Image 1: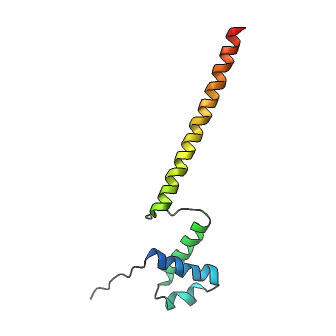
Image 2 (image 1 turned 60 degrees about the horizontal axis):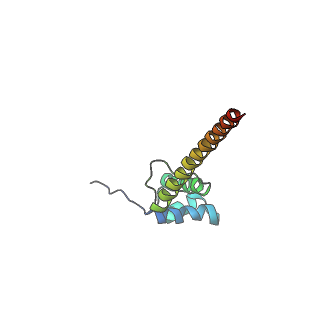
Image 3 (image 1 turned 45 degrees about the vertical axis):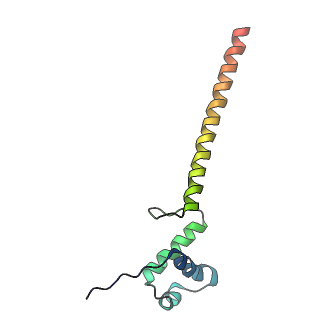
Length: 102
């Protein structure tokens, strides 16, 4: 007989991990009452801790809002780089024009 693998929604995992991080429960206390294996529960707690510190999960499907934020941050970095290049080019061109007019 094969066992079906249980799956939990992202919201459930986040709320479960919040019990440990916010309300002071331990993983061994909260895991069995939520029907979660301890290793899975510990992984959820670590992931929520990392997310609260601003680290995005690797290899996990990101919510659309988080994906949009990452795209906008990458765009801002690219635009800042382009702006710096233009500033340097303008300064270089202005110095050449200044030297030629004398």
